[in-house]
Length: 81
Image 1 (cartoon, one colour):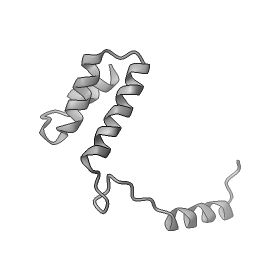
Image 2: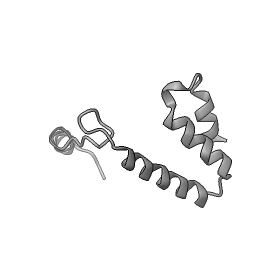
Image 3: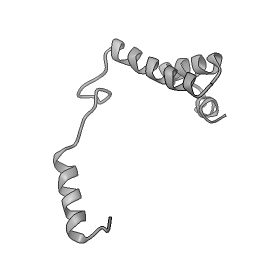
Image 4: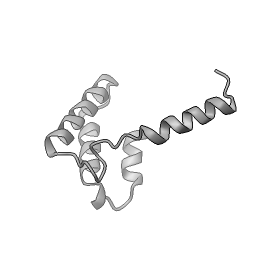
């Protein structure tokens, strides 16, 4: 699709009026049950990709306690290796 000035203006206007604040936003925080559901979705996808169970558990635990992780490279290393 070719972007013209008109199309860019339409996209800008569309984006300005349809901002979606998901449940993880300050105005609509997630409940524990919703967070647990997302953990399950991630675990299902990771199992489908044949990731080892201990790696999946380590990722979930690190993300749940992200504010306590001393070095974010721990998490990114688990996700990229």
